[in-house]
Each structure stands twice: as C-alpha cells, then as structure tokens.
Length: 227
Image (tube, rainbow, N blue to C red):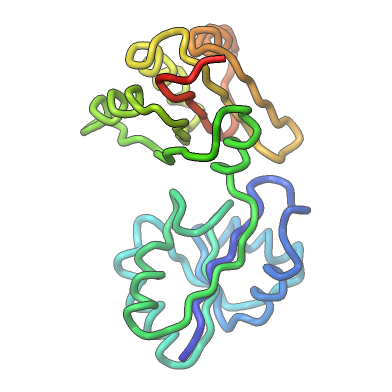
C-alpha cells in the first residue's frame, strides 16, 4: 500500500525545517498544500520540484477522495499546511482518517508547532493542558469561553490579530482581570514576542498599540493556579 506523509513545516524560522522533512517531500510523488502559492516558496527554497494540489479548509471534504485515489494508484503523498502540523487547526484530519480506513500507511514527520512552542515559553504548567485552537467566531463562543475559564489546567488558544482585543476582553470578563496568561506573537520569527502578565495588564498593553500584527497564541493559566 502507499504512504500518506503528514509533514510539519516551519512556523516562522526556516531553520526549523528538518532534513527528514526535506527528504520526505523530495521522495513523495505529489504534495497536497493548504496554499500552493505559500508552499511553492518553501519548496523552491529547498529545491523541491513536485506536482502540487490544493488541500485546504474549503475543499478538504471534496479533495479527500482525490487524495485516496492517488494513494490507491500506488503514489506516495505528502500533506503540508502553511505552517505547523497538518491536522492541528489546519486540514489533515479527514485525509488521515480516510487513509487509515483505506488500509494505507500514515507516517508523521514532526516539527515545530505554535501550540507547544508557546506553551513551553509561557512558564505555566504544561504537564496537562487543553488545546482550543481558534474559538468559533459567534455560535457557541461564549459557552466555550465560560468552560475555558473554569478549567484547572492550562489552556492554549490561537487568535488572529484583528480579534485579539476582543478575546482579551472576553477572557477578562469570564476568567477575571487577575488571571495569569501569556501572549506569544510571531513565534520563531524575527520579531518574536512573549509577554507573561495578568489578563488586564495584557489587555491594556494591546489597547495602547497603534497596530496589531502577527499570529498570536494565548496561554491561559488554570483557574486554581497561583504563584
């Protein structure tokens, strides 16, 4: 049977791309990409020339059968996202499930990911944690926030720059202004920033900024944690 490779790509610093990942992409017959334009730049940097096909949030359900057809024909397929591990807040789960169900081999080529990088950087307990990824923008959002606020373990949340102030205000409301948290921005990139402070202090800092740019990870301390 053929092999589906899930290959982690750098979350910022290209030096984090492993030699094994490069060799895997060079050996694959085709590569599924979250965004072929972004992936092509990465592949060109490593002189990898392979047929690419789009595999992203908006076509994942339709493209799964195409991917399985390729595997069924004996082709080894690699799947990559724009940054990080496929399947973690990125397309990948449906393809992996279908590959298993079809009897193909699934192999993961590990690498950097924003969740564990931010979690370890935060200095908050990480022996147990809850990964939330991106919260729903509307339906069910407040219920999830209330649930997160009641957790006794660390929670990791992804957020975009244009919703950062919104979620900080919501976390202050649900978890309290004094709850300790960490904001990690632009991880592994030139302007990486890791801030650790009570929620209210973090909220006030970002309210004072003229612009908010970059990709954000919020690490929230558990309800019973104190220093």
